[in-house]
Amino acid sequence: MKKRRLFNDTILIALLILIPVAMLILSNTGENNPDGTVLITVDGEIFERLPLADNAEITVVTNAGNNYVIIRNGEVWVSDADCPNKTCVNHRAISKAGEQIVCLPHKMVLEIVDKDDKDIDSLSQ
Image (cartoon, rainbow, N blue to C red; front, side):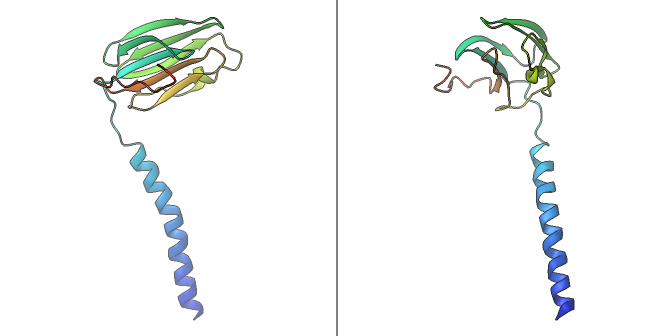
């Protein structure tokens, strides 16, 4: 009886470890979306919409300060900002549809959307 319980416990522990690891691997295997678009909004208003395939450097000027955004090799990130916490600068580069970088002090959002995605969420309208 003890051997069977030990065997069942071992299988349960293995599943509890393997399932999250498999989910993590699967969630990170998506490819960059070079056909995507970088949608930049400030305080809910569209600031700029740029192809992810283009290389660009943009200064996003807001009432609260500036963010310096770089698009390169199918990825986008904030290289510098004059906000106090710099959370947006420390965020990794994004490249897949649905990913976002947010600068709360400047009310700026970078979001990757599909190239043909004309639907903007209600906050951005």
